[in-house]
Length: 307
Length: 329
Ligand SMILES: Nc1ncnc2c1ncn2[C@@H]1O[C@H](COP(=O)(O)OP(=O)(O)OP(=O)(O)O)[C@@H](O)[C@H]1O
Ligand SMILES: [Mg+2]
Image (cartoon, rainbow over all chains, first blue to last red):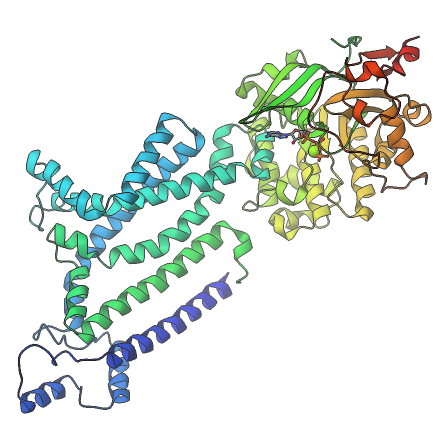
C-alpha cells in the first residue's frame, strides 16, 4: 500500500512538472503580449515595463525564474492588476470558490447518491421518476437559466436569501451552492442509479442474498461498495473543477471567486495570472485524482498493486 | 397433476413447481410442473441440458429468482411452504437450514470483502456470534475444505484464490451453518477436470459427515454416477424420468434418458461425459405435447398432442406415452 501511494505521488509530481513546462511555453508562444494592444505606448515605456516583468530576458531565463518562484509559492506579479501579485489574487478569490465548491459537491453527493440508490432499489416507482426528472432538468437546463430563475423566486419574491454579493453571511451562499450542485446532483444520481442496477445483478449479490442476512445487510455490506466506485471516480475531477471557480456562478451571483479572474486574465493576456490559475487547477486535479485512486484502492483490493 | 405418492418423511417435498419469466412480448416457462421428494441424507441428482430449468428450480427454492420470475406450486420443508414465505421468514431458512453453491465460483464471492468476513457474516447474523468467534469457526471450516494455511487465507480477498479454491470457499460457506439441505448448482463445471473430482468428493464427504441432504445439479452424467443416489432427468422444464442411480444406468426407460446414456462415453469413471450429443437442440417454443417429442425418434402421434403423465412404478417414475404404459403395468 505504501509503495502504491509513493508511486501515485511520484506520477503526480511528474505530471505537474510537465504541466508547468507546457503552460509556460504555450503562453509565451501565443502571439501578442500583455502590453501589445490597448493604448499606444512609447518604446521606452514598453521597454521599461518589459524589464519590470522580465519579458526582455530570453525565454529559458524566464522559465527558470518562474520555476524558482513557484518553489516559494511566488507566482509573480499580475500584469493587469499592477499592485497585486498572482498569489494574492488567487488567495483572495480562492476561499470563496472553495467554500461554495465544497458545499456544492457535498450537497450534490448526498442528494445525488440518495436519489440514485432510491431509484435503483425501486425502479419505475414515483421516486425513480422524480429522480429522473431532476436528472433531466439538472443536465439540460443551463446554469444561466436556473440561476436567475432561483434568484427571482427565492430572493426577489420570497426574500429568503440575498440576490447576490457576499453580504449576509451564509445566506448569500445558499443559492450559488444549490445552482452549482444541481447539474452534479443530476449526473451523480444517474451514475449511481445505473451503477447500482448493474451491481445488483452481480452474482456475489445473489450469494449474499442466499446467506439470509436480510436485504439491509445485503445492500449496505455488499451492494454499496461496488455501486460507489464509479461515483468516486467521477467526484475527484469534478471537485477539482468545481472548487477552482465557475465564471457563470460568480457573474450571476456577483461573487469574488477566481473563475472570473481566470477569464479576465485570459482576455488580457495576463500570463502570470492565467498560469497561476491553470497550475492551481492542474495541481488540484492531480492531487484529487491521487486521493480518488487511494479511496478506490481502499475499497477494491484488486486496485492495490498498482497498475 | 402428476400422480406422485407423498412420502411422509421426506425432508423436502416439491409439488408441481412452476417458474415463469415475464418478458416484454412473451412468457417463458422455465420450470413446468416439477415434483420430487428429497430424503434425509440423500444425494439427489438433477440432470438436463443447458436451459432445461435446473438452476431455476434451485433459485426458486432459495427465493433467488430474477425480478421478472414468478413461482407457483409448493415446496414443503419443515412444515413451511418455501414458495410462500415472506422475505423475513425466508431469510431465516436460507443460509442456515438450506444453502447453495453456485455454478460460477469466479463471480460468486464479493471481490471487496475478505473471505473470512464473507464466511463469518452468516454466523454473526444467524447464530449471533461475535466477529471473533465467527472468524474462528470460519477458519476451522476453511481447514475442513482443505484450504492450506486457513488463518492467513481467511484474511485474503477472493481474487487471491484460484477457481478451485474459491469453490472450496463457497462450499465452506454453504456448509458452515450445518444446513439440512445443500443445493449444489453444477459446482464443478467451471473447474479444471483434475479438481472436479476432488471438489465433488469433498461435497459428498462433508454432506455425509453432517447428515446434509444434497441436490446436485449437473449436466455431467459422470458426476451423477460418482455422487448421486437418485436422479431426476429434466427436459424443457419437465421431469422426464426419475430413478435410483443403478436403475437409471442399467434400465433407463425414457427415450431421452436412453439417448443421454448412449451419448455418454462407455469408459468407466470417465468424468468428461457431457449431454447435448443427442441430435437436435431443445426448442424454446412448446406445443401441448411432450417437450422432447420433436427430437424423439420413437415419438407417435399422441406425443405432440398431449403431455404424458408422470407414471410411477415403485421408485421409478417416467413421463412417456410410448414407454410409460408398460412402466405402470
Ligand atoms: N430472468 C430470466 N428471464 C427470462 N428467461 C430466463 C431468466 N432466467 C432464466 N431464464 C430461462 O430459463 C430457462 C432455464 O434456465 P436455467 O438457468 O434453469 O437453465 P439450466 O438448466 O440451469 O442451464 P445451464 O446448464 O446452462 O445452467 C432458460 O431457457 C433461460 O433462458
Ligand atoms: Mg444452470
